[in-house]
Image (tube, rainbow, N blue to C red; front, side):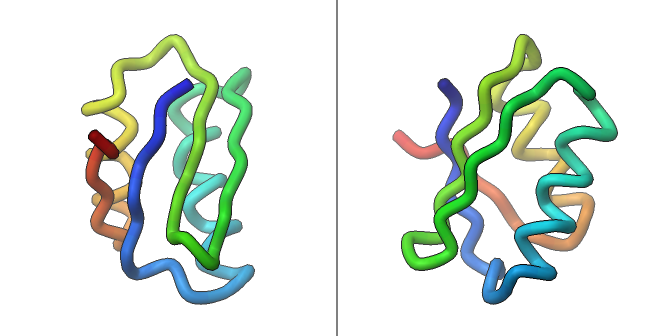
Length: 66
């Protein structure tokens, strides 16, 4: 499970955009989003850095949670 923090997610629309960006890279990915904690959990075979870059390029700066 990959965990990313995404600070600019504020609403359901933001969450949908983040999920759409991830699914564009990996259609089989499972995405869970917690808006309160600004946390995205992703089950994917892609590297965490690739997913963080994808979300960031969609306009939502993301960092791999340590």
